[in-house]
Length: 370
Image (cartoon, rainbow, N blue to C red):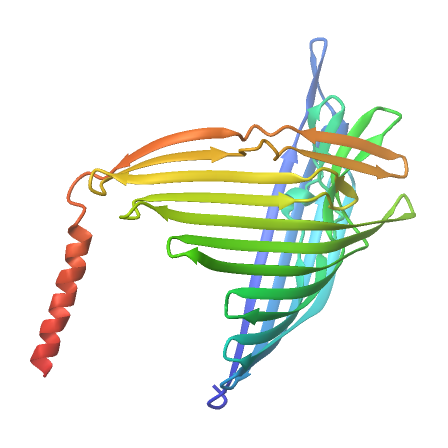
């Protein structure tokens, strides 16, 4: 603490990652076992990060302000032996952040946030080994991936703690997406992660939760957002953009006089949207219903769960740029109806008794002290 209303924090962190992997493919040719050099590789990866930060927090009765700065020194080296690929990175980056909030009225608050952050590639995204899903489809990593740097800011207003409106803007440099690339000559599709030049996202969010009745609660979240992807493919600049909507509706109801039955319904809607030059060109609806009833004086619970009620979770993805034109349909095996029964054996009142005994002991101590 610097003063009654000002607090300063400082800290540091260091991490080191070292991995070694090898894959060897052997082909049987006649009676001989030969190493396939095209699909044999070793991959060594080292990553060290040293970071330090400062954070200042202050505020008053109706307002609060926070500002911070973090510095990270990163050293990375990834070596693919057979592929003769070396990815070496050495950089110092600064990550500022700030947030502020102000209570305009007792039930009305405005707030704003800004931050810059880094997301480094996962090891599985870097590993260059080729994995064959079938004779014509390959999945592989990209050892030349760069980190993602993202600047994000938002401003919002909250009313009665139950209603929130927010606008956000996000600019990401080097966002990583796994994209299918077609080799139209050899009829092979390779899925590999790549860095995009830039991804811009902005949108409007609304969130509310309230009780319709004493035994019925509702939560609604909806986001209308815009996405624009920019990247360089085969030295050609590619741009794609789209507006989309993502919404969640959750309902929880307690039934019967003793509230022993509960019903929960969750609905998630996702409109056609853009994800790294890939268009999910059909809307999806995730729907889950669960019903439970306590029986046998609270010792037993009967339950019923239904997933994907309307069979609308399957999705379609299209990739269409330059000479790349592919279409994927995923028919998910996720519809089910599940019936369950749970029973508690033994004395289920033991935990309650312990709490009452603890409270009785405190009451006796208070009487003694008086």
